[in-house]
Image (cartoon, rainbow, N blue to C red; front, side, top):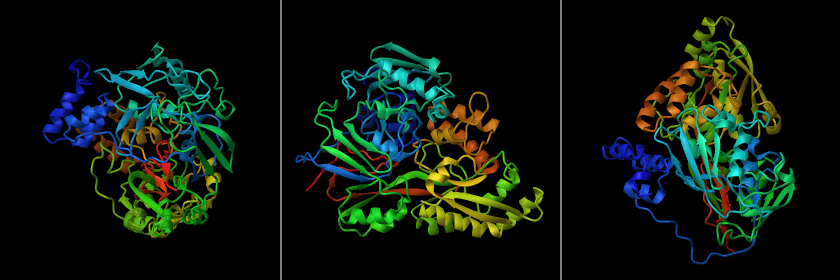
Length: 545
């Protein structure tokens, strides 16, 4: 993309900011690629240098790679809420874009894209000659069909909450067989990243009728040989995959060993599994269990994973702002990080924006102040203190430990908390219902992405689907929507200073710490990388005997 006519006008502005030291080279690279510039050109402009990753000269083909994960219920891919299920799906169906471990977004099923000057029209150019595994050609009809599913309220996809404020089905325009235009209702910088949301798999419009397993037709490198929920899934490599010479292994076997860490760690040490999908458990516990295992690589990735102490803003006593503020003051964050996560992370500040997010506005960490908590509780009218129940999934050891720390530290602040641990499956059946709970949130590359998923309202002013606290704050939503359309990261950060302040003072979450992400693979697994989102990607992995 060297022709100046094709360069978005925001890119020269970013170059000027880079030269003046206002943004980093990585920030320039990330934003320039979002606006359609190739990674190679953007890297060269940023002075980072660029070369495609060299592959080992002696790739070994064949074999079956065994992955320990939960083989979950799979029907409509657009409604998936758990990374484990998407780690199976991503080998069978694929995305329009791909955001790598460094938060750089690349074309995938797309060949390229262009954004209009005002960021309200996005032109998506599809790769040609890509086939679904049943022989159908992938084209613009599949893109329009799939995205319309996202915005169908009867489907119930969380992507509607993520993208619905700026796009709906009426904005989807097929230009020709290999080009689609997105006509947005409001400016949005992160469209390419949103297209890699973990449930944004492209579907075959000719065969999909709501249940993927009944017509498992994707463009991915593998096909589904068998799928037994709660037990095992076997994928077989395609011979006609569009990325030539891939995949390297013949098959992937996903084995459901439950949620307990000990048997999975033992299987890793004994060589009975090759990869441990840690996305559904306590990654730091996996690290502690396997850090000294001689035949295992435990890969650490800095991430935006976290655990959120969330309060329903529409249910007593947490409908009272002073009660919410009081509970926030009951967090001893340093203690929580050390006892729950062995210090492997960063302190949080009651805003769901991480220091690793590009638009993060630096804030001081609030103190543990039980005296202030007692004062606020009395001002709220609870002169005898507050009794409440804290629900949480007990399949995450660090969550269990954090719940115990919260109970202990909140007692001095006037809260008498009863702990209600639940099996993970039971908790997630009603994760948005409990007045007070702990929710695990996976990595997202952008602060705007997380806030839009978890705390925003729709165009009618109602909480979006994943707004589990049912919090509605008009000023917060107005600023967030404005931030979503601002290209300049410094200007967006100015708005985030206000967004973070609102969430810290008027919000509904306590956030004590951000987690490092750990994934484990046998040393026989070659070319395997950890992804901060917890994604397991095996197309380019091979096995040493």
